[in-house]
Length: 99
Image (cartoon, rainbow, N blue to C red; front, top):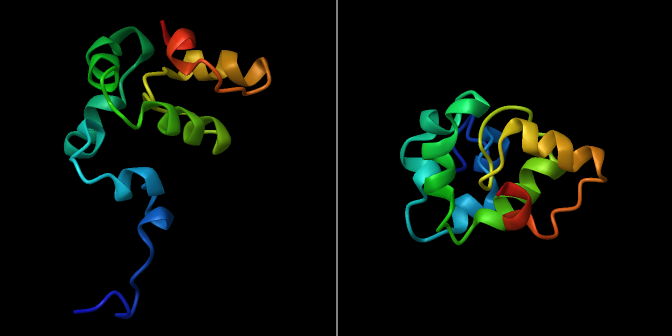
């Protein structure tokens, strides 16, 4: 059945960012998304999965641009993104901000 079937919606409308769809390798967040929606104090394992990801910076940028309030995005917790948004939402140096 084609994507033109009745009711089919683009993946981005389903909440999956384009960078995740375009990535050829399976991203940890797509394999087990529930592990990325934990309280900040339990974010260690999810952040460790984000650390080597090639899509880490685009992911953090997406979360900031779309005001994602929940979950670990690009290695940043909800609290870390809140701080970045207060500072103007710049994602420059996301890796430094997350440490």
